[in-house]
Image (cartoon, rainbow, N blue to C red; front, side, top):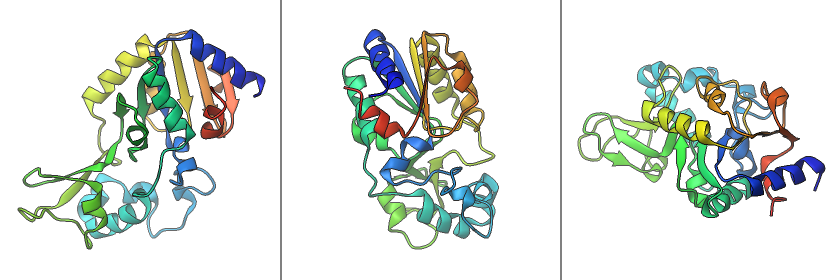
Length: 240
């Protein structure tokens, strides 16, 4: 265990209101591609840029092409939680961790056992009919042909994920701000911190330890009390 990871482990024992703020890098070790790394979706070749495809206007105007990409690249029904998801759930069980704030939409934190998970960008596990509001799980989308429609009223189904051009849920934001402002440790993990307004929420942290764990540099590295460059699952697997 290197010196920064040992410092991190000791700080966890000292703190009692830890909040985790994570992004796509948390799930890459579970086999889910991120957007911005060299192997990420932004560096793959599509007819349209990924940020265009996962926008509200593209969903409305080119629904079939939206769902082709969405089913192919955004859904990972067989993905399993990795060491980071599991350790965070364990820290919550111990009463150390009070909330996971995630930009991910894969539901892996809940699958690992975390209870207080604030999903800034929604979840692929929630889908609803835009006409009658009936709820559908991910399996219904995975096994649908083409554009999924409601089995009761025939209405178009929309994933409950925040697309580009859409706003974040105000209730989720207020709960996130409340947790971060009360935290004695904020762990930022697996995120480039370039997606706003989500990245701006960490400004509410006034606690003792700002921890940044990421493969690449982030804009907050200079403010970190503990800075660890590495894969987040590998880092958390060393915390006992």
